Amino acid sequence: LGNSGPRQKGLESDFLAVLSDYPSPDISPPIFRRGEKLRVISDEGGWWKAISLSTGRESYIPGICVARVYHGWLFEGLGREKAEELLQLPDTKVGSFMIRESETKKGFYSLSVRHRQVKHYRIFRLPNNWYYISPRLTFQCLEDLVNHYSEVADGLCCVLTTPCLTQSTPAPAARASSSPVTLRQKTFDWKRASRLQEDPEGAGNPLGVDESLFSYGLRESIASYLSLTGDDSTARLSVPGSDRQALLLAAPPAYVCTWV
Image (cartoon, rainbow, N blue to C red):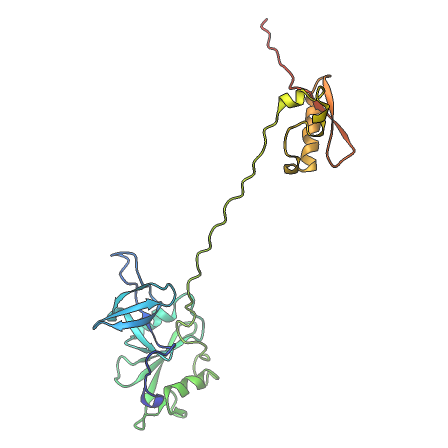
């Protein structure tokens, strides 16, 4: 990092960025997906043992499938093509950025910024190890460069907003589905209705059902229907919650089929 200071291990802003789904979906369902952030557990020589910061899954992943990230924005081992893929992920916003090592010039860096499309800027390095994008403005370290362009665009396509993959957040826990509500209904008792005249005590609830399960309007509709389809053998029903009276059929009408 030149004068930007030594790399410290264990910083919260240091992680591995997954560059491609691993394993490949053609082989098996991926354990880690592109753009996922991993916390290093151990270096196994060409492989990393890591844990996902979003899913909590722990596994091994080859070094070619990840890039080391320092300070949240300095990507090591990342080319231009992969940089564009990460900056074009769906949750990446305009102004998201990263600084990566130059593919073509050793010891130099590039600034990649998400705008309408991904823009790339060469970061030059002076013999005294100061950095600049525009020769008129130099910085003692990369962090100073980032801080400046986070305040003003000063010739860039836009102000730098957040480091790439900052929007990656832990996956929400699955919400437990609530148990369905069931309602137990009592069966209409025609025999009870037919004994209505003989049993005055049943007049309060001749249908033999829990009145709390029915609205007033429904009880009125039932009583009106029965009165329209009934015969002269009727009984009077007092509908709860009302002074109105309705005729209740003492028993369902009997239909006789005759052959001629």
